[in-house]
Length: 101
Image 1 (cartoon, rainbow, N blue to C red):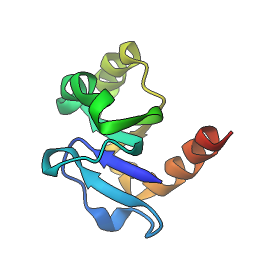
Image 2: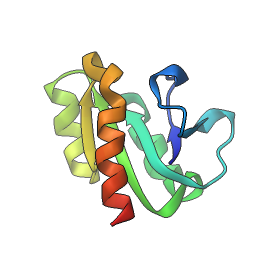
Image 3: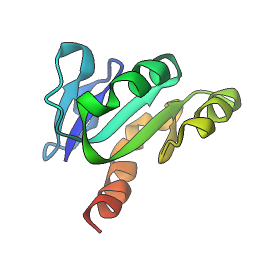
């Protein structure tokens, strides 16, 4: 899967079979998955068409309940708590099935 992050993330969190790009370093526009946080939601909304394929899945990293409330109005596909970010591949595996179906 091609992944674009809209904020700095440790690339070692991702399985090696994924190609990870950071939006601010230049994105190819081929992302299957976009990963955002509360600070990048508007930037994501403005740039998702340039960063992602037509069919893509968005994952939001949330730090508290108010983040979830903000994201639910933006049609985000999946959420993960910041404290659980080490489990990001579990979410990616689930959304990958959605994309391939």
